[in-house]
Image (cartoon, rainbow, N blue to C red):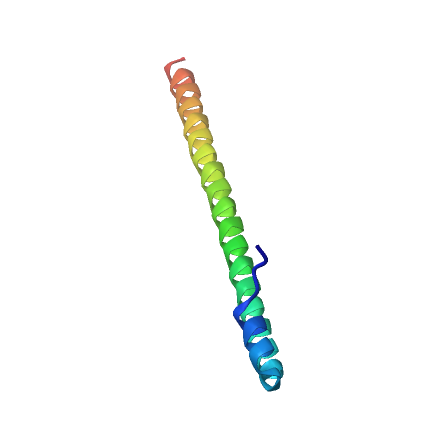
Length: 80
């Protein structure tokens, strides 16, 4: 079964409304495209934030490890 858009059916009934029907279709397509772009940007931003969060957690544990090692070295030298 062939699916026609509402605007196509309206144009078939009254050819004088064709310009307006085309504008309506173009408007609908434009905002559908913008919605998809917005969703893609949002997904990309979420991926970026997640990656940054992982890096910051790694950096936090790395610095903690380095500080513990530095304290152990300092304490070891102090006892000598």
